[in-house]
Length: 440
Ligand code: S3P
Image (cartoon, rainbow, N blue to C red; front, side, top):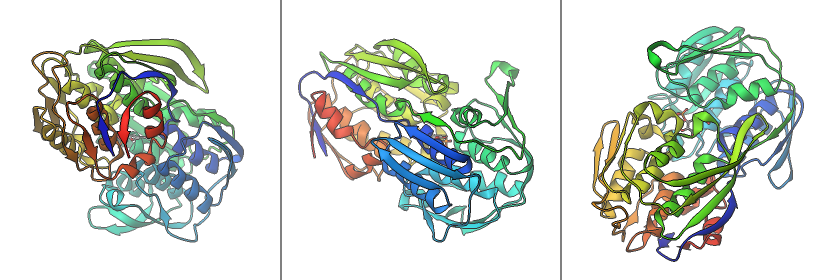
């Protein structure tokens, strides 16, 4: 795909369903007793893999309309008859392993080349402490076979700020004798805790406020059963980020994303763009299915580089690639620190953003856990573009560089654009509807 500069971007769109919440709705629906009806499910490849996996573990899974899915939970998982292939989805495989560990079964998990390269030790370690067993490739890589059942209580302090690890431990804890306790030194997205409550479980969350930080303790009693419920999935802020930043960097633009999730643990990008002087307005704030959602409008803005507070990282970890694009059009440097987790996402996102931006003529400095985008002398001074960027099959690297191309002097092309469908299947259609020139 190749993106080039055209006129202003204008219009109103609905962001696709939140990926994190979509995975959780399917998994909790499968663990629950009775029927769960989901509205607004993200029908991206990652989530479809989780739907297939839930059927493989014994749930009834049926698509009943656009974004509408019906899950008939059996109150637990049964042993799958074949290998469970989670595709590109780190969230999918890690949460499903946690849920599966609670049951007396063996299951073999695999994924695509990216997922097979990602660390699973971070979930295997706590699940092992609870009593699960496994055999896997070196370095805790997929494929691996997990044997679950007979779990005991754990009190686990997360070594890295990861909602996936927290969620895997909590889902395993549902079946563990004595439950589970997770301490997170930095708060991460809390969709699992919220949704467990919506399915009838008791989850106690307390602030561990030492050092002025935002640490949390999450306690879940064992042996709790879940009851199917209705889930309405809000719009994904991690996807909405692409059209919003596109509007900020393209002269004359004004774009509104309706129904975007504004969970306080997911709005780090909006805060940062606000600090950079972005013209953003949030209207029609409302509660939907236990989460806050709103309509967010972005208008073309003169941006200024900022130093992003490192403690903000968990609330915008997937948004640094697109923030780096906004930073390329800002006046002065933007410094992003404490973002080492970006190196173990679908790709090494620090390295790929540094390489892609440099190839487009943007000044960048890469550190082990940091990225600095030098920015221009004048705001909107311009970016040369004119590169073909290797995305290593990473959807967010692809979308970020296409957005860059919309405001660059020369077009920007990306390889493997098909991977965009893992999280944002309608990206091309929606961007074109706003006036973007993207050639497929
Ligand atoms: C997610 C958590 C984050 C994020 C991922 C989705 C989740 O990963 O990057 O896209 O749904 O729990 P980590 O938990 O590894 O930080």
